[in-house]
Length: 115
Length: 110
Image (spheres, rainbow over the protein chains, first blue to last red):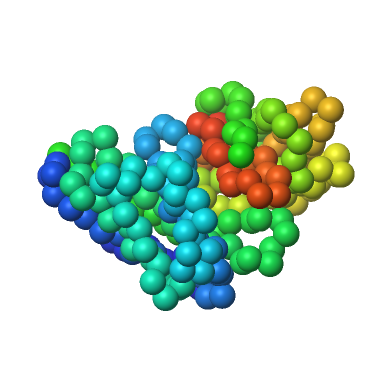
């Protein structure tokens, strides 16, 4: 079974530029998450999708962050414009809906550096 | 959602020694999961213990759960250099999402 795929793995941009990250979850996983992990901290949930609908985006800074999962499979997270404090690793995770244990499968992450 | 608080924040041991890290949480749970994160990688699920279980083993991992104290511990026996990573606990109940704490950073020295 292929794991969660993310690209790019690394990205360096200047502040006020825009950036987009892509995630392809494990096949058949209806639930998809985006997390932000700042150095030295645990991952912080940004948004949760169930198929192509948003379940929880309460911690997504909506003035600059947006995410979509149009066909209920892969997803894109965008930041526009980026700030220095957005420097972090952005992790995508997925799980099956019918799973009662709530185990999540994580991708390798995209490391964003904003200069 | 509730956050698991790992303790200690950092731990250094010699190869071959055992490593113990703890997790505390505040409200009732259905299960508690432990995840590992190697440097530059995503999180990997290690082990899950349900609220009606007190102890669980998986290879060199031993997890305990004390629901009366709202705490869990993860023991890694005979540590290897490859165990060097950050470890996160994730207490979970229905309808909740994970809230990760800062984790325990384990360094296994050769």
